[in-house]
Length: 365
Image (tube, rainbow, N blue to C red; front, side, top):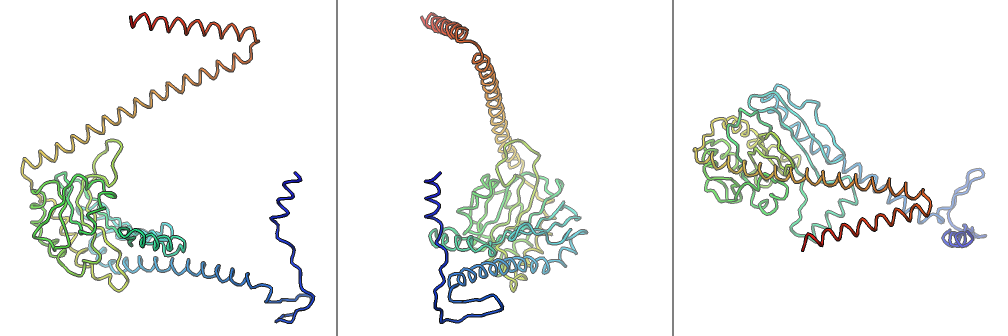
């Protein structure tokens, strides 16, 4: 105890000793005297705290205004397309994530507009992301904006994965989009040179590009700084661990534009609605349908095997747990017996193990 107090006394700073003479600035009020020269360190600490607080509120405001500007700029379009646009308005999920929800349209069950913005409100994260982007030249954090259209099953009669992807995104997109692992990247003369196709089969691309509205929108040079990918998919974005009913989505992934450039994407977003309506008319060759079906059946078999293996491992673990529990109960029971009785039990266990080992050696012979 004495050694602990000795260490604590060394860590404790010495008491403040006011000098007998002070010729600096001071303020007096009744019994109180304030001498600013004694609080130089505190001034810097207070300034740092105020800067941190101001950084938080300014960063939070930047993110909120960015999301609000987008929602306001496309509110009229959503009102024309949906009977219930922006249900509950712009919903905040933390200080850098926002989303809106719209529903009530033919072929589209719902639209989630999802903002995942950079953490401008968090000074530590902002510094870390800035430094890391200088260290890793491939790392480039973005203000992510996704328009996720969940389709009715009748809106897309076939099961496939298809996407148009900005070439800058090709290297890493499969890390965050498991569904795109079904596809292969290729060039297409109908697209601008900064975009590539990711498709399971060429027949799918040919069928989709019969809709010229989306092609014209993709060729608009104003969207180039913001476009990341446009995908049509029947698979989840993360690899599933069990079988589930597939959901069909059209997902537009963008870099969220600044307030002054929100309208640059109006043509692309507007073209999505006739594009989705045109998916009902997509017609594939019989051999294409067979290949697509076979790929999904193969993956479903893989999932079933994995599920059976996981179940088998769970049962084995449960049996091991039961054995361990029985051993623990037996050990507790034996520990309460007398030394002589414990010795008898140990001798009995020793003889049993000898008989087992002898039986194994006989079977080997």
